Length: 497
Image (cartoon, rainbow, N blue to C red):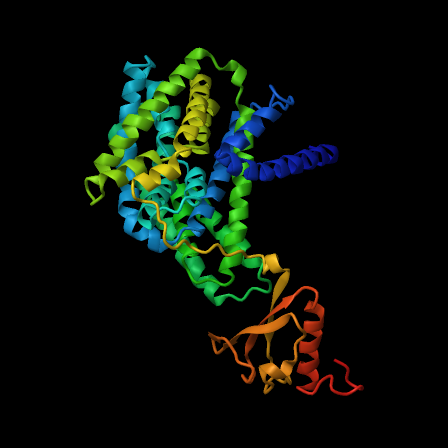
């Protein structure tokens, strides 16, 4: 790639990104999952649309795994542990035992009903089984369901990628036939357990370090937190363990630790997660070739998706829920809300990159199943949640924006009272801040409190001042004047405020 190619890439890439972000609004207004809009955008740009050629399965697999790492990191960092903790047992069981049940049912139907040979039947079942973290995190957070149910679905989608990736990779490479089923099961257990331990170790170690580390700029905290989650993935993969389990658990630990600038970190990783989803779905849309879809592809995709949605998924939920006190309506919702998205399509690129016979047909079948059944499942989700009694109508979590007071065009200023500053001893009312600015909080010895006009500032205080942007400069200048000259600054002509 030369400079000219880079210029073209940046021009086209920025345009696609802007169109994709604007499409989020469109998808919400018409009730479509945003991932389908991104897939459609990729199809429109592809060889059958504007003519962009993209058929590199190896590159698609690498980019897909990278995007999935960022999506899982965003999911873990924005998931509340108090919601996931009571549901972790069922979520983990769905990610393991539930996946086994789904694979067996769909593989059997694909072989005996659709007449697929066993290798492709098992690959199809394995690829379609995992729920998609991006789809679950984005769709369910728009629906105010009970924390326990949300926790089950989020835990499952964050953990079920690990065993399925191992299974699909082994099937594509023919490792199961060579090593035997028992050793393969041991490999899955090893990868998940070691990956989980690596993720927890990196997460707790990073949390301890960041609580003691004072970085020079607040914008560095979101970067280093995200970097630690990716580090957990890299270390796990280096040790031949599950990087997906590692990145999700590391992010879950860091997201539920009291770290500096948590709100800014959350907003940053949400943006990165959206960027990863957009890039991933557009790329997968480019990789697909709808003109090659035959009636057989459409029929096979519809039947396989129907077996998964209406038979295998409910059965897997039923088998796993028998170990827990879960009502049938809650089971129905959990079964229906197991949304597929980019993950099955990404997994379908593994046999495609390995040149498994029939892998292109497999990719087309999976593409059809994902698009159709994502629409089928997502559309009635809110109404189904209400009917199943898992829709929470009372109090929702407040959405806190990291961008400081954008709606009122204001900024939050932090002022430290250092040694020697004449701010020490000045009462809040004596600051005489301009109209549109006020002291909202004082942090003294690590304890925050709302000050009164007569509250006297002391050395070491951190003062939080809210100021509209039209008076921000005046506010900063006033604070500097009082810090240099004391409470009487500005009262005489020789010392203007």
